[in-house]
Length: 161
Image (tube, rainbow, N blue to C red; front, side):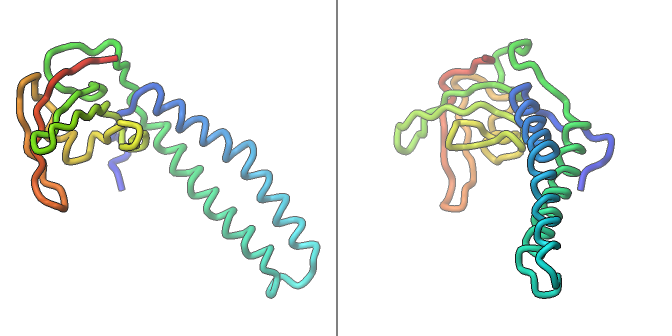
């Protein structure tokens, strides 16, 4: 998957979201599923006990997610967006763009992969659009290949907030 030494860039908000999900899985979900398994066991024959098998599958999912989150939290490189400045696009930048075809304005903040949510304007650093934006400045135009073709954008504003 990843090199063990490779850091995972994320904002402080993204880091807190991962830690919160991890705490919920460890403190709430894990004990709940252990209880569900125990209760299902008390119903007798496990070979035909759907509740038991469903709880074991849920436990497996929870344990895998806990391991994944623990790894990501341990390798997190928290980037303080407020300490970044400059006139070019870097990780953490909030970028205002105009779609050159439709003249529609859009705004994205470039964040870590685990915190990305395009509907909220949070764009993964690994996305084609973010990769095209890195290093660009206000006034620059970029072209991005998407499944339906190529989109062209103009950079209107860059802020680190």
